[in-house]
Length: 167
Length: 286
Image 1 (cartoon, rainbow over the protein chains, first blue to last red):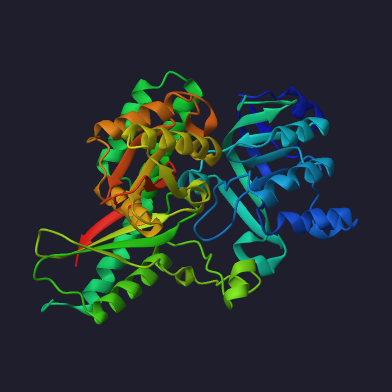
Image 2 (cartoon, rainbow over the protein chains, first blue to last red):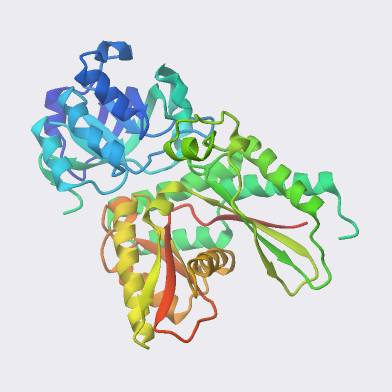
């Protein structure tokens, strides 16, 4: 299934574990250093400072550097703990790699949000990355919050509606 | 060595680092082709095909296989009458720096004092060459040359690797059982499988880790010992699969190196579940 951001509630509801998807449009990129800061902005009611709307969006767990992009482990403490608050704020798809916990899978279900895994194929993703823009926390370098425009990033739904491929 | 040429050595090391970060060795490509042929799970097969396609694109473009371009780890082999000078070590260091800029390596070196480097408050060095290589491991070789192996170590496998003692009860199988247990746990959490398991067994944590490093230099996908084959087959039986999507191929192969052991009930074991791209390795004679 080809998905274009922003992702609607209906599209999120229609996807199931094991579904192969492609993602096109604008997506956020962030990882260990920046995601807790984004969560703090949301908690402080300052999400508008991000300069882009989280609702219906995708968070790709990656650095953005001259080396390209590629998923980091989503089960790292600071990344996995961001999944629930970001889902609550409207993020519909968390894109990364690695097994996530039952607690996180339940939190995703609560907010009709999804987790998908993407192969770490940096050389191929480079050809599908159309634009990249640093949008917040520039002092974090490659770990800052970025917005990418992408064309058909490949992924597989790994957690949806309380179930996961890790069962 | 008498004919040591600083500039030539820098250039050789630079190109070898780029090759390590952007290419699969032929035996690894063949291991992927065999895994694709034998995989029944369509999603697992798709991941394996995509990783191999990515390797072909990276090799063609001389670009990184993975955005986590890794920390350079070097093994230096020295022949009978060959010599390594301080100037040669300087040339190797400069070659690594130039290679990181050329690849390009991910600028992920942390700046600052001891405390700042721990909590990352010193900021990131924007230069790809700000990533310093790990200490060089030296060993002797039969040929009368100085041979350099560069390996690029990513962060995911480092999170899942484990170095710890095993009480062997004077039974090799006890050690293998523990390795399979650690590896299965690590591969399940890793995300970027299929793995190559790099394992070292020694008398100390340092020796076990150095054996793990040498296992990646010496290991071959098409030459597997009985112990290596057993470990691979048992971890694959856990049905983790590429990217955790299930299937036959959680592990492509195991590279195991057993060092000298002491009279004791304990063995020190280092297990690194390397990712789908590792070992990212290239070799050159200087």
